[in-house]
Image (cartoon, rainbow, N blue to C red; front, side, top):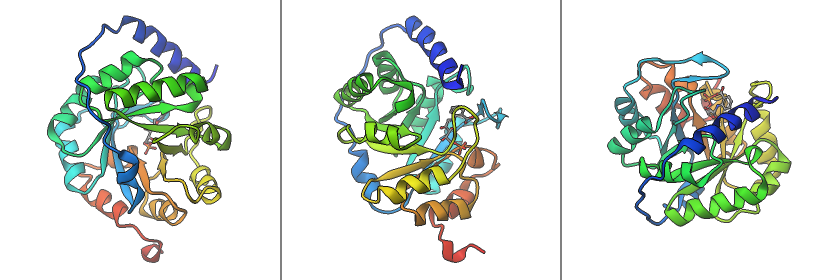
Length: 253
Ligand SMILES: O=C(O)c1ccccc1NCC(=O)[C@H](O)[C@H](O)COP(=O)(O)O
C-alpha cells in the first residue's frame, strides 16, 4: 500500500467524525493573479513529517507566522493533519489570526467538510492533490472550494497529473518534488515540467533547503517555492527566508 493510500484511509475515518461547522462565505482572493509576477516564498508551519520524523516540537506558531510575514513570505502554509504531521486546525487559526497574508490549509482533502473546516479556521487557500482524488471529485471539490471563497492550490507529481490540473479553471498549480512512494525529493521533477510548460504559473514544492536550490528553480521558471523543513529547522527563519526570496544564480558559487 502506498503511503498516500494509507493517509487517505485515515482521512476517510476522520471525515466521518467531523461535525458540520459554520462558515462565512467570501470571494476567493485571486491567488493566481498574485503569483503571476515576481518570485514568491510560501513558508510552511511543519512540526514533523512521515519522512523526517520530528522537525521542531515546541513551536510558537503565531510568533513563527509573524516572522515569516515580516521576512517577506507571500503566503503561509499550515499542515493541519494531526496523525502524520502533528498539525491541527488550531494551528491554522493561530496563524490566520496574526497575519495579513493568505494562509494555505495543507492537508489531504477528500471531502467538502474539510474545506468548510479550512474556511472556518481562517484559510484563504486549500490544497487539493491530484493523486488523491478521482478527476471528477477534483472538479467538484475545486468548484465547492471556490464557491465558499477558498482559492485552490492543485498539487501534481508528473505530466499526466498536470494535464488533469490544467483542465481546472483559476487554480494555482504546485509541482511536488517529493515522490510519495519513496519520499525521495528531486528538484528535476519541477524543473522538467516547468521547462516543458513555460506559460504555466507554477509553485515548486518540497526539498528546497538552500539558496542555490531556490535559484535553480527560479531560473527554470518557478513563480514560487513552498518551503517547510529548511525554515522550520532554523531557530530564527528570517535570514534564510530573505535569502531565498532574493536568490539569484549569479550569487551562488
Ligand atoms: O514531508 C513529508 O514527509 C511528506 C510525506 C508524505 C506526504 C506529504 C509530505 N509532505 C507534505 C509537503 O508537501 C511538504 O510539507 C511541503 O511541500 C514542504 O516540503 P519541505 O520543504 O521538503 O519540508
